[in-house]
Image (cartoon, rainbow, N blue to C red; front, top):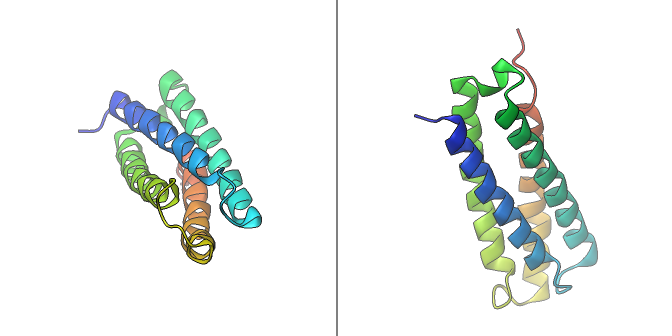
Length: 130
């Protein structure tokens, strides 16, 4: 059973993972454009995660803490956490070394995923349509 405190804990872990991934991408070893785009997306997602955490904490909107929505949000956070762990693994010092592979990992794999996650986090903040 998913409850508000479990989702808040998942949000705390995800925000920590985002900050770690941002440090890994900010080493200057990657293509400037690709790393800047990834950092921008991660910053936007971090902001959205904090906004979601505030919405859940204060629960001003009852639709926001509905059990189905919390379950979906917890699943989204779980998948996003796995993506952040893999990004951290590949881009930490000692991870993938050749510039070409790092650039293509960012351009072809992680940036499109981060764009999709940003959209999913934005959609999770919208009320259900009737």
